[in-house]
Length: 96
Image (tube, rainbow, N blue to C red):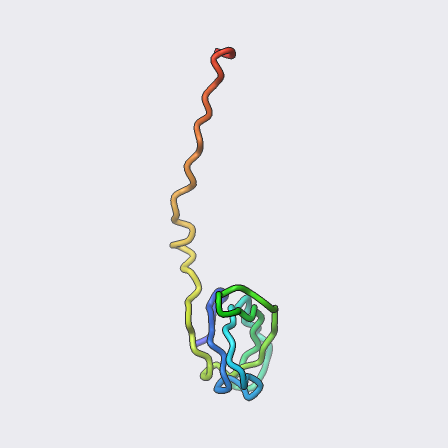
């Protein structure tokens, strides 16, 4: 299954021989460029151990070698949050 925007992947040597040192990768975009069967170009951010983006990268990987660590948030869930409370500001007494 193709990763989605927002997914966090553990990318290792199983995804491509270039990843001798494993990395965490947050997907920005999955390109629809023609390539070998089972391979894909991904744009995203390399993450440090704390989950912070440290470098933007484009990587060419084998889909079957990717392991999903975190999923993209469901858009319905994100948009169904209650709006932030609006602070009621009183009218100063001199203007009443």
